[in-house]
Length: 129
Image 1: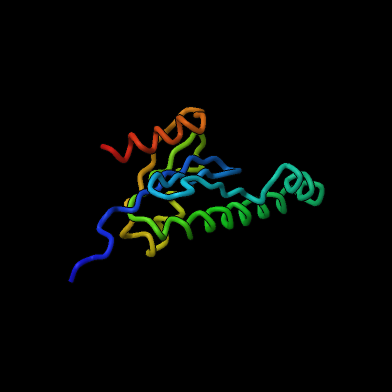
Image 2: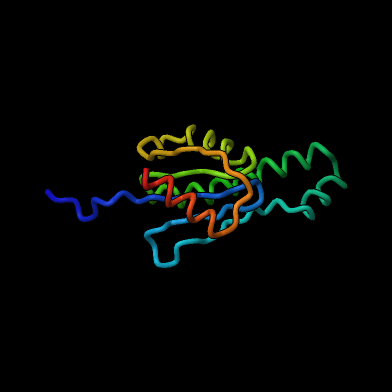
């Protein structure tokens, strides 16, 4: 039996807690963004009610944000999470708790603030190794 597509599907994700830029160098539309719903306005509104509510709201919305990214990751074999903040590590830990991701290679790399072209180059260089 011959596999239809033996090429590894690779995805780079440059992210922080508010947005994730997904970079697929082998796709027509190679980048798109997923944004967290937890904005400054949401935080301010929740804080007016209580700090506890704000933390619960942030955690719930962060989980929804990571779940949106996770749905996309399921379509790939090799994923690179990179960026300035610890969001990449939080997402990595979130994915590690879910058995659906056990066969997907997921790597975490630190990165400085990068322009769009630098992000693409970072992903290209990583997957050429």
